[in-house]
Image 1 (cartoon, one colour):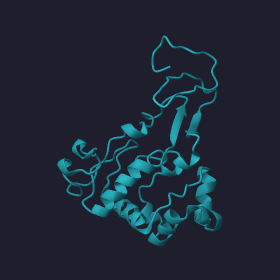
Image 2 (image 1 turned 60 degrees about the vertical axis):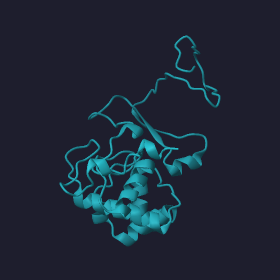
Image 3 (image 1 turned 180 degrees about the horizontal axis):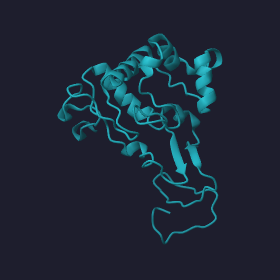
Image 4 (image 1 turned 90 degrees about the horizontal axis):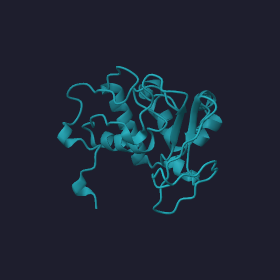
Length: 203
């Protein structure tokens, strides 16, 4: 309990924590694989509260923890900047862009594989697409994990699409580890990168 090795419990099935408590747990997963981790308020998963436990060793360097993945440089377009921030806060647990497949497919090249109307419909109402659209059905069959409805408005969808389009035009895939570099001159300088929130703006 609370990270103190003197506070040990053994054989626990549940660890009860108070509002300011923490715990370190050790457990064994008997079969190698990738296991999805969510909290008990499952609606949070649609907002990006999804983790993955990679059991069985780290292959190709493994997947970095969501919150430890370094940010790529931000696009110049303000809409694409907002789309990038939304992607990094909600989507990195399941997807990368030019970093390889995760729980879901690598989204690099998505604006080349699908037209804008299809992508807009997918982001707006994935559950309807998975019921009626052959491409969406095939994606569900392959990846097994349904795309959650993020409740996105039209402006938010425009921001995602602007970021995906920027990424497809400017990222230079060189491996399976995020982040991927962007083409020279395609991004803001580091001092203007909007991916990090300046401490002066935190209240």
